[in-house]
Length: 143
Image 1 (cartoon, rainbow, N blue to C red):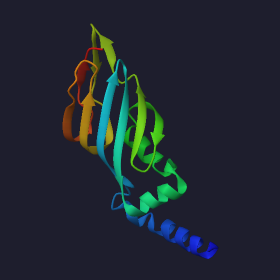
Image 2: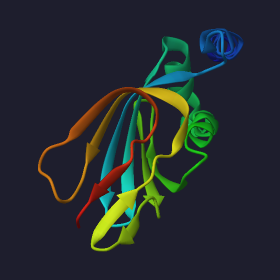
Image 3: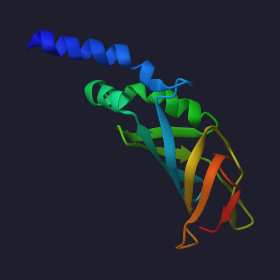
Image 4: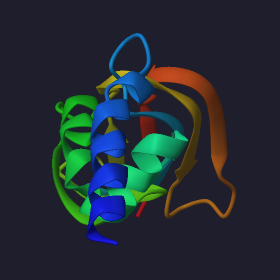
């Protein structure tokens, strides 16, 4: 039994670099949901892992995804609230500024393109949806 586990482990470790694709990306970000709250925001990052990286994360934890999150959101001051094989939740600080009664969010470049970005602001019950962005859009809202 120990030999079988060791063999599976060795195969996973050997195949993990092959599963990362041409650019070494362990996953693709499918959607980014941004919930603004005054000057801060909560980012929910939904990503798609391949089969081998998914097994790797299940076996060894989500720490292997953290460098990709850091590279993608390097232009933000954030802390990771939760991370698993499907999504990461980030609390982003000082992403907007208060000016004349409005909160203004200036566009921030992302380290990777996002298929779908959904933005929620406190002053509107309706979300705004964007496709294929590599930066956050300029946004303003009232609290």
